[in-house]
Image (cartoon, rainbow, N blue to C red):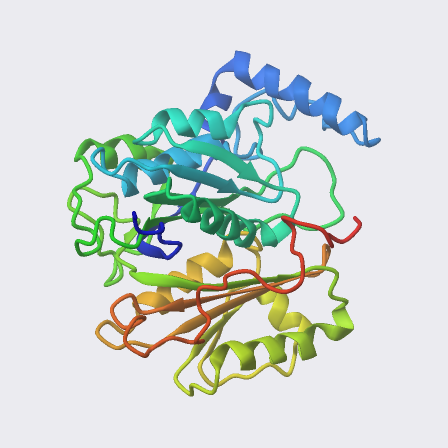
Length: 361
């Protein structure tokens, strides 16, 4: 009888990048006018107006394209001999070219032509939902590699009730299932032309000790290696219950281990002023969709050779999602170093954004 497919997901490596300027397609007057007309019609349905003259030139006042941002990350992170089976794009606010079939386009440019789709309209919970979906696909036996890409861009051409992100930013996480590509992270070379092709789209970051990417990468690649543990999502958590709920969840996930490190999003830290400080890192404010994942990569790589589990937690104050995810050292997760004895259970008791119980917005 064939062995059951593994549902374990191992982070091979990751890439992150900050981007500047408008989307490259917005330099084309035809595409710029198409975007203007699309967004103008979209805004009017909600009683809003796009400022006159905003699309006259491709200036810094225009925003980014998630297709271009994600394509740059794919080029830096995924080698041609690493076919991806599943790609999920996670975002909250739309980009400046919302009429494009972005996930379909990314399937075309990603090695392996993976099944691709987007998770949106869930605020900062989108990337957590993507991890739960990937776990389900891994259980089917048809997902050897999974690519999660979280992106956000600063500009919307109409007034909104909440401020936008501080900068255009993207984070990509490449996973394998157990038994696939067991070589050390970064063992697959990225083609030398990937750096040249991707470089104009953004600003390389992480060029210090955490840039452990393959030769020829842009400097965005982070040599992070970890096993995805438990993913918990709780919908409809009122602001006055966040602190108690988060404290209870962290205590349960840590299971008494004193060496657990915690990464809190800026929004969760704001909703939980008395949160612990020992072993806790709070992400800088201004990047609600990508900031947690950006900072998480620092925690997964800041002490090479020392196994310490990590819990990352986030709260979306508008949609009231409380989300948590645990990470274990890939080398020790099967040797008694697990955060919880039931680490294979990757979804919470509460139905999250991918099921019933989703809060009414």
